[in-house]
Image (cartoon, rainbow over all chains, first blue to last red; front, side, top):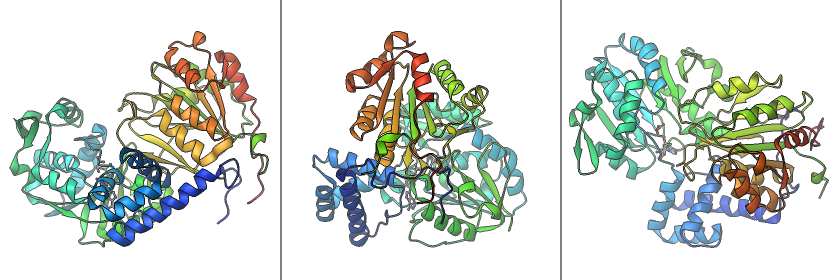
Length: 290
Length: 199
Ligand SMILES: C[S@@+](CC[C@H](N)C(=O)[O-])C[C@H]1O[C@@H](n2cnc3c(N)ncnc32)[C@H](O)[C@@H]1O
């Protein structure tokens, strides 16, 4: 494929030293090793961020270089678990981007009211904050009883935490502000009880949620959905892998189903732009049109 | 080795909250014939909107974009790092990350500078302007290690001198200038790959 003249070319062999080239070899070998030994395929993740996290892990393990890290994780499953936690950046929040949830109420809820039964997929749900936020929203809109939410992640450890429905108490103030700005119609404290230093969310909220492990890179579609959330997950993939995963989402959405991306993600840089129409001027909400 | 030293492709500018006036001065001075990409990383509140982009666009006819994931890096454009994400630079495009804030900042100037140094090496210019912490120092050192250029606003002319002062301590060979000189200097930097023919 031709590179437009105006695009900046990478610094192939110019100015960059031996160290960077060698490091790239080490990283590629490590990712290959992880894939062949553990089955987790990070080979098409966005390079700069993978590199950053591998270097941090190397330092945290007190090792000198990525080859040493490679040897350790192949022989020590505990070290691999730690690496998996690092590679699968699990940072999340309840009602992250309140304006997104406000727009979801305004644009998507009316569409959902037309379905007798609603299936939603949260792909890359991490520790569940986003899923519980949506359960709260659907409850307030009177739609939760006819909804089933499938929440998946590559990382089983975060799913175990998500199933408990306990979130850090010290973030409840931030989440309460988010909830209000997201258009919440009740008092946020109705939904949880403080327990030690955790906020335990009412078990009734998770009555229609199924958490399960699913790898977007290697696993297939498992149903047809009316809404798919995949927010702040695709940013960790390179462009080719993003396109592959967009194909999976496209195949998993009903016609006129809604695709929700993170606020700085876009279908614009994917091959699927023309298969969807934007349903919001400000948020990354798209509807499958053909 | 070819003549990478001949010019630059990428200018990265770091400043903390309160850096609007300096950023505005900088973009206003950039010539329309700019053959580099300029990436601005400013600390700001996680829910801040597109106001920064809008205010900067008012100061220049060069296009100003707020970065989205996988957006292409092109010459003659100005890019603003979005709040609440780290901006990483890959060869030819941006990638975003929600990794934890680095020393309380997301975007972290260090993260962007580091990844740019590793992708663009000697064709990178790092600029540290007014700011109230020491973000950017570490990344600026990386840029210089990779053969790139370091520019720092003279702390005496900065509204908050801490960030430029820290950058000078970390990179003693950085070129230190008052804002106006620095802005003109950036505007006159030679581009690395003007009118590239295919590769
Ligand atoms: C930054 S979190 C996003 C959480 C939430 N969606 C949000 O926006 O707040 C990214 C999540 O993607 C998951 N992830 C990364 N690679 C994945 C893959 N191949 N398949 C499924 N999930 C993946 C990570 O484990 C992590 O929990």
